[in-house]
Length: 140
Image 1 (tube, one colour):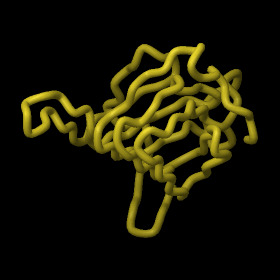
Image 2: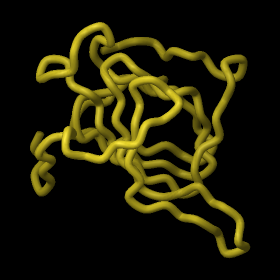
Image 3: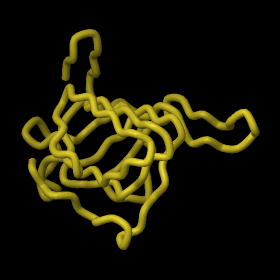
Image 4: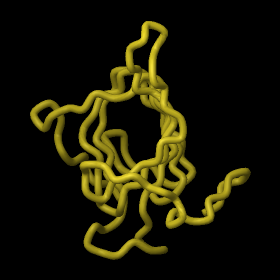
């Protein structure tokens, strides 16, 4: 993948950390450990990898969140976001992103994983299925 001024040789060399959700991994780049009052804030900058067709559960942004799609694509309640897209989520907004592609096929050039660079100011609040639908409308 090549975005002018940014080059990623490939996701295979990244030391991804597993999450509780199948097909979702992450790599912390910078995490805000505490606020001025000594309380955990939850903000920071991370890379997130979603295998094709896999999604992150519904969540609400406590503060703002900015997402840059480095590879692949994802779909959420706002629509489809492809490689190179920047998406800004306001504090209090909610979504449930799902990576483009087919979960039944191997990851490859025609079925890439979605890789995101995410910066959040205050972290997220997970929502249960009663508060938020598990799957957004698919547009990919």
